[in-house]
Length: 262
Image 1 (cartoon, rainbow, N blue to C red):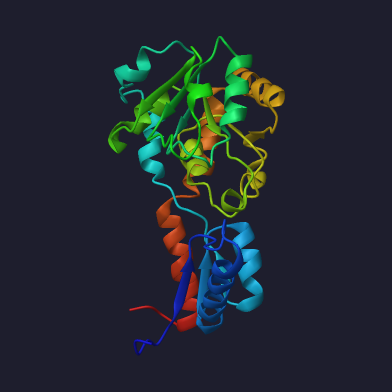
Image 2 (cartoon, rainbow, N blue to C red):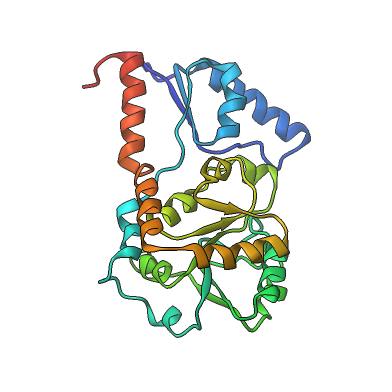
């Protein structure tokens, strides 16, 4: 206790995910104490909100916020496409972010094999100690470009015809709020994703597929159906998930609970 007048618990992850036994029980007990002792609880995912709400009626869902202005640079004619991706044959299906065990590498490998005329580009830090990347890396149409400066990311996304959200289905991933979804939409890009509770809310704007055949077909179909008008519509959806929108929502909740903030 710190002599606080308002206690806010911002639950950004499902901390017990992937744990078991005594460790899971201890995390559950500590979090329950935190939940019941807080005046307000913010969660960032649908499932986390659903599970925390019974312990505190003042539990509010605040999904991840994106730097939408930055990613909107992918729609800007002046944005430079970095040479590292400019020299890769198109069409390109790409992913931006850490490459680890949250990604369904087996699915991606099978999809890339089914689409030999497509290039599959991964921009981000790879973690081979977390997942075996060799089957995917061995394919001739797969490119790992490594970690890139944040300032250059819109240029990489600009070169992609499709953006990918190929998450595995695990306790850890199900409770996440996929920031990349909002970034891709802000960039105006068609998105193909595996099933995810958060993505399901965007079914009008995201193509969802869970097996290699359907996922590969979804990539081709989404690229063929894309248009400048749809890109602008996606970007408009993305703007609704900017950080300033999230902050406004948080401020409104705090004001309703505590009155006018200083």
